Length: 128
Image (cartoon, rainbow, N blue to C red; front, side, top):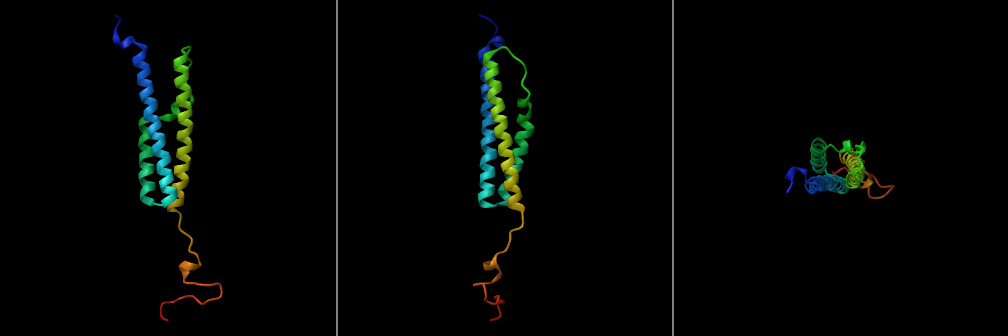
């Protein structure tokens, strides 16, 4: 029996686990963007950006855009998987950025918030 560190199956298992962790990071970024956009919550925006920064530092998905040349078909398949996950990470990052800007953008006050009940009515001052 050969040495265990030379088995290709263990290396592929490590790459599959890394792809799974990156997939979880992508899902977290997209879910945080969705929650931030729907609820317009500043807390959700802060948590989402913090999680995004943590996964950016830990996983470094931008390295997946420049794959190393390899003749191994398994490695080429993993590189394609990592590249598609990196593109999804970029899409989730842009959605999170847009949702965060929407959450922190000042809300426009409409006529109902200003005290108007109909177009020609006088504003409600609270002294009537």
